[in-house]
Picture 1: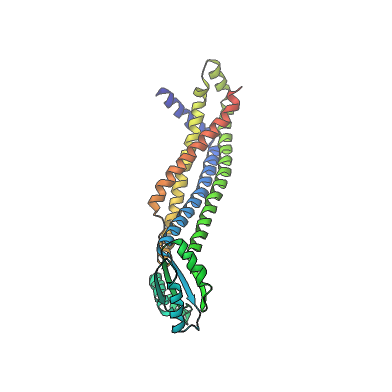
Picture 2: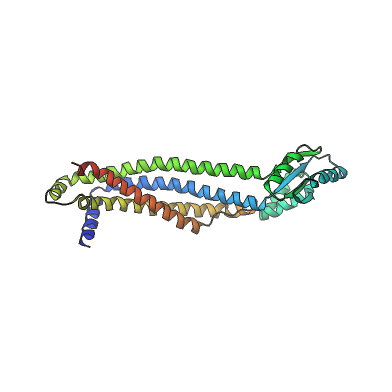
Length: 296
């Protein structure tokens, strides 16, 4: 207990002596984790959106050319119905498609009235039993006369998955770089304190103080800087996300039929992740700064 009180007192004194470098350390670690937090927020929401699309858009939509008549529509439907694995098939006129889009846009649906002529095509919507069937429908429908285009949402999901993976890999690379920079900044901060107290540390070692006893205050200082930075970064990320949620949350839910990840869920996870990183960076910086001096 006495040792802990001694270490805490030393930490307070050390931070007081090196206010500028301590502030720089907190700023560097906070900036690093804020960037990581934004990557994390974007990645989590893209993953959620991908899952929503897989659930809500598990169909193939066949767009028809404008000059296709009712007889040709029935002929196309007949060909598609013969494909093994088709669960349900439905013709959707351009008027019905516009009506559905207006419903999805909610209060913003009136904006579609300014388009003038309805730009949406007539279409045939097909529900498939599995992805393999949907792939077969996608390939077969493109070869049918009267078909303008085929929209298979698996392609969209795949693109979103790739984007999410890219963000995650990018975040890892950036995290490693920023962690190294943060460890160096913390290390330099602690090193200044070590140099200022070099005479005192030499006396402590001379009278038999262990390396861990000498290292204690500096280790706690590094961890303290990491914890403070973590809490600031988590709070800033949460506040930014709250503002984004207020600005576009409802619009995203209406237009894309996908909500944003709840801010409270993110706050808890971000705090845990940031604390782990902050403590690790602070402790590593302290150990690196002390190693050379204690090895003498």
